Amino acid sequence: MAGIELVNVQKSYVVEKRNVQVLSGISLQVPEESITVILGKSGCGKTTLLRLVGELEQPDGGEIRYGAVHKTAFVFQEPRLMPWLNVTDNICFGLKKQALDSLEIQSIIYTVGLEGFERAYPFQLSGGMQQRVSIARALAYQPTFIMMDEPFAALDYFTREQMQRELLRVQKSQGASILFVTHSIDEALLLGHKIVIIEEGLIKAEFDLPKSEKLPNLLDEEFIEWKRNIIQNLNVHI
Ligand SMILES: Nc1ncnc2c1ncn2[C@@H]1O[C@H](COP(=O)(O)OP(=O)(O)O)[C@@H](O)[C@H]1O
Ligand SMILES: [Mg+2]
Image (cartoon, rainbow, N blue to C red; front, side):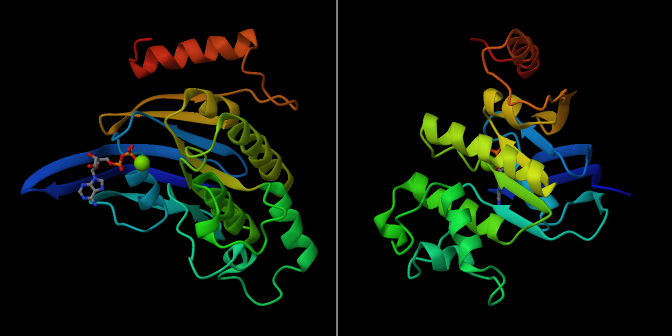
């Protein structure tokens, strides 16, 4: 089996002696070598789902089946850097010695736009820059499967767009599988080969998007039509 398969996955938490059912039965295929986006409102269970797939937590019921052996990386909602390490050392943290040569490290630093900050410490960086270090750290590991939890939420519009396009490029050139969580419809449409909408612990809708060779344009008619479709499914009123 290729990719990852979730079969009737359930998860609840006990909060102040009350049982909170977060995921009520999620069945989902995460195909290989493409970007699957989990889209939903805050609190709908996106992070919980990602943590289950990343085996940071165990489901109460159901099963998660993993295909080929994966080299996995996780980008959290917040940067989680080592405060005592500079940018380069944070990026290389956890890598075997000489896993990457200095040119490769420099190319990753360039990809996330942090050239000139190689020796800076996290406290000297903005929140967005710190998050870019954590994305660079994930890329440096050269994973075949990347889980990303709203990784661009702290970035300004321009940096965010640049990083989204960079991620598309990296995914295409490395053929990685990506499971990407967001609450942004535009981001989901820009990145996703497949978009999965979660609401009240269940999959509300799934879309398979045709992807052309060229990068999508947010103002194309086709794009706007998809957006309309998703907005209707999300029950949001604008
Ligand atoms: N460790 C936990 N203990 C108790 N409740 C949790 C825990 N993690 C998440 N929750 C609850 O699960 C729900 C979904 O959370 P989360 O998966 O973080 O949502 P999202 O990422 O979509 O914003 C929320 O109601 C949240 O309070
Ligand atoms: Mg979350």
